[in-house]
Length: 632
Image 1 (spheres, helix red, strand yellow):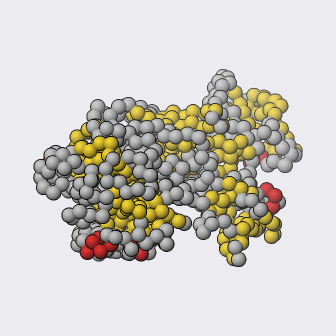
Image 2: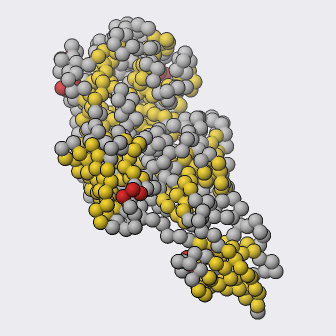
Image 3: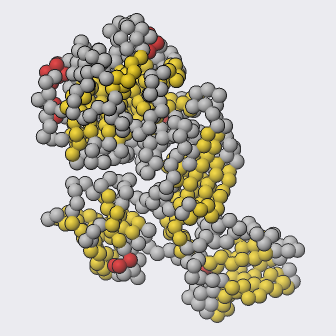
């Protein structure tokens, strides 16, 4: 088991299915986000959120490695398959009714749906979490290794009518709204008071400038553009408890276009790639007109733009294939292809509006070299405001938010620019677009003051594996023997043996009508200790034939809990607690550069016993930011 500055996580080797609309997020065990330790046969409460109903039901699989030791099925319309929060129970037993053997178990949740004939809206406009007064960007956490997988973020760039009241509507307050996949508000609240969020002040400047163009980063942070000045990029953690300015005016005060940008419309769009991987980059685009600075990039060091780079590197120049200015947003995939769009000078303009520059080498400024350019003369495609790939690794779709008179969201084939979907939800102006990990499309609409989610057509399912695991103990070494069963005067008397140190309260009598089960607790049963290790259970006879088992519940060891962490003279000192009987050798210190991991043992770490149940770990500092856990 593990515990630490972040929750205990163990990721199984499963990935979500592509192009599915229903999926599970916000998985919790026994109401919490930590892994748990249980005795064999002890029940576990499993809760999760479905973004929409599982119209073909849900299966919850209990895995030992890749083997399913128990499958729980929940039909459509019942708890376990409903939109929103569902809670189901695993009784701790394997298939057939016997308690799960000692070991580590993971939990996979697979909802299924019959889907729709065409792209269809799955979000509910009346949900309070879908309301955003003046949206200017949207992003979805698509990292299944994150505790906040599936969370939706929208940027509200103007204070709404209820701002200033004692309890304003969350979507009215200038800042970033964070909600669950079903449109319910985040459990921890919004952390936003009059636009001050995690200590950063979002400002309503009257021009809907802050925040803008949200992007999810691989370091489990949300990045947003603050355009109240020339433009800076701010990064916040998933619960908006901390923020960091990761690119500011210092990073472009020697840029050749700095004067034009500062005196014009500013850096009007942004992107972030590979954050937290050691090769992260921050991108800015200029929407000044005419001309413009094009698209520029800065390498990241320790989570921020390289502080010694005060110029940046120009990726795309205006004047070639990008003939106007990139005011329609851009996004880069992992193949060094930059998908960028631009704004026409007038209705019916013959300039191409969307394009992709391929294979940028990271050094040479691109002027020409697009694989495709589309949209010339298409007034229904004018007014592109944001661009989003459904995957940076292997994109199958590229979507565009349309703020022009036609409105809606257009989807193209990223390989050839062919139209896949023409202006979904046309007539509503969209200022942000994003995808989740399973193929749902999200848009932030200013005309609706809402964000909406849309599902692709077709029958579908997706599997989400809980980050938390269940550690089962006790069953491999404790054996319960029933020595006799006697029926007298409608009373069943069962004698059995167990551990000599166990008390009668550690046992539960189970029964079933067939030998294969399922077994359930016997109501009104009484268990008494006859002598150390010898016990007797009595119960009222129930039916002509009944089968019995005895379940033993063993107490769980105390989970290690970090109580403090200090860094002094390049040494990290971590104090933590465990069971009073634990030796120091029972624990291993783990660390990672980012909160979701992966975590590895810390070389050279030392763990010592301070007093019974109190321990201290020391290690050499490694990097400016490090996350720690303790494994039993």
